[in-house]
Image 1: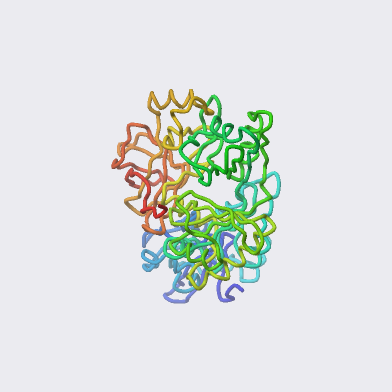
Image 2: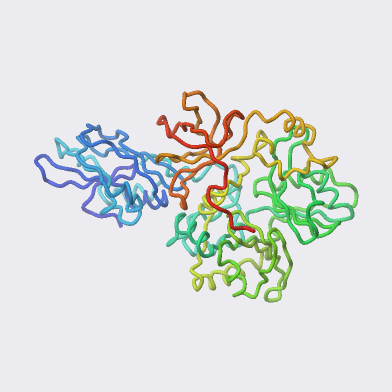
Length: 130
Length: 378
């Protein structure tokens, strides 16, 4: 039920590696499980582009009608883009969490970091255990 | 994502009770949470807080609020018992009418519970307290009751279904239920051979009704309401939307905006106190506080930026001095902005600009007088 081409964190972020540009770029969002648990998302706080982040560092907040949750960087690198559509349509995270509801792009120096994340099967086990 | 995801489930010593519609909510796939010791729906699939909120403001929403308490005082002097204990003045209403009132601590004056009292007659008074406070309200009234007046906790004898929104009357009409009731009036009718009390009450600020079927008959009534709702673009609504709806009206929630340490004077509920009555719980302390002026008052906050106030966030003056605390706060689906209620130093007045400390970041908000959106209850 979770896309096989993504990696996941135990904190319910997903990460998708693309090989462009050199070194690699990782797109980050939150999982369908996370958006479902939060409910209607009404506000997203995003990092500034150019910011260097460590893996596990808080890089923003996702706020729903009823609660707020921190967003953690799944990998270390430099924030090169944030999703401009979320300013006006934060609900895209609910309706399309793996597509139009993406949150930020991080350029990484080493793609090996991705190996430390959960695959879809491991994330699904994590969700069903929690 | 942080583990705030799990915060909807507060630790409880006992597992929550199930209301009469529990199986139906599960079958609908509702997200459930503990409300005052009862496992109740927060929101429904295909809905969500924003859609459910919008249904109540524009068409009609159906809520199961059977977790609310029910109690009655019966016997000669029942009405007098209620009137010398609870804050509001029952002389203001006639049999067949309901009234918002407070059960205050005596002598302290803090609020044990806020409730609706339904006057059926001099020897027959019905109460709807909050779920978590029902046992305590019943205990205090029973202790004060004279011989001949019985105080009964009917928590699981009746269900409560709220039908709220501009098309609520159409929905009741579709079921053959009466709708021509003045605000806060109620009447008992037969529906499919079973008794249902229809009340023109609610917690949303819209024209609406609360229906009281027998606990065992609540399912059939719920099913009929849900079956008739789609033709009116209505939908089932959870307690998540109920909270955003009541916050937009500035209606207080006990446990947040009212408590044993927050008096009706501070919460600006003086209109629900019969000041001229010779006796009610907390009278001496509340009269003194009213005379003196409360040190802090409950006021509305509306964000001027993207901040969303949440309970317990500190409120600061523009200069950075602490001036109070947020008691309720959410995103207003109607205004698309953060709104809340806060207990603020008495010197702070409507129109003032203040700062709310949102997890270390200041958000600028204006002090306003609720409601945040116009009420349509009358």
